[in-house]
Length: 170
Image (cartoon, rainbow, N blue to C red; front, side, top):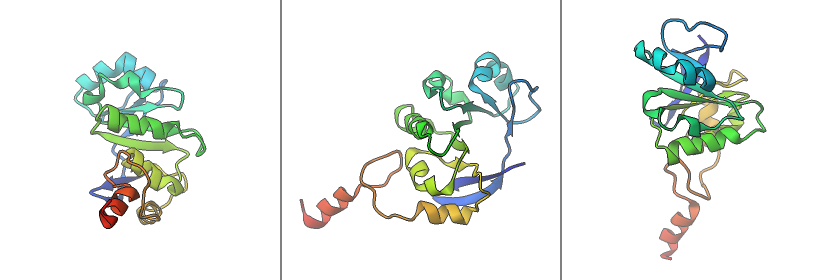
């Protein structure tokens, strides 16, 4: 099983992944699986009826809006970064958390680097498959490099202007 870094109670931890990624041309093994959006739309009901946890992989060109009504039945959404320069998955994570109130796992997969940890957490990601084999400790360090934020996001951090207003009585 591949290593996975998860954010649990504000701490980064390394874990074995209990989910199996399944390609569209493979049969689904027993247990919990991550399948493509296309496969979920055609086989999702049958796989969920088996009593397993299902994850849906969203590619960069796909929209999470297609999952709106199914989100309560899905355990995780894996958002693919085809390259570290492609930020569409950041927007998808924010939509899942802020617009749709998704409480399941939002996982970053693909070209995932710890240098983006802070931004991923702010957008709502809570699980990561790093390409560089970095440790949970390295992710904790990278996510805490900056104390202040300048705008609200899916996390609960207050923007710096709130702190300044409180300090100066504005």
